[in-house]
Length: 104
Image: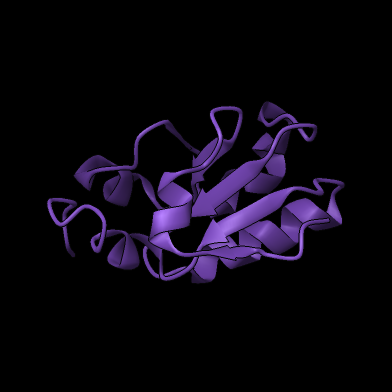
């Protein structure tokens, strides 16, 4: 299990190509905009859809402020995913590296 679970936007932007980037926000938030390479699995659906993720590859979660993604991280780790991180501060923090990302 990696020591670092909270990634700052700069590190999140530089995730390795094999990382699975997962947006755990709601549908309306996803529609406003999402990060490159992201797949959409709202937190409320993560339990039913976690089989869509490969536990052998890194998983990087994000949400609006970082709270939901931290809950998703705990859930995935509890269910056998060892290499899971999340975007500290969520999309609000992401705006530091991408000022054009929609604020809401």
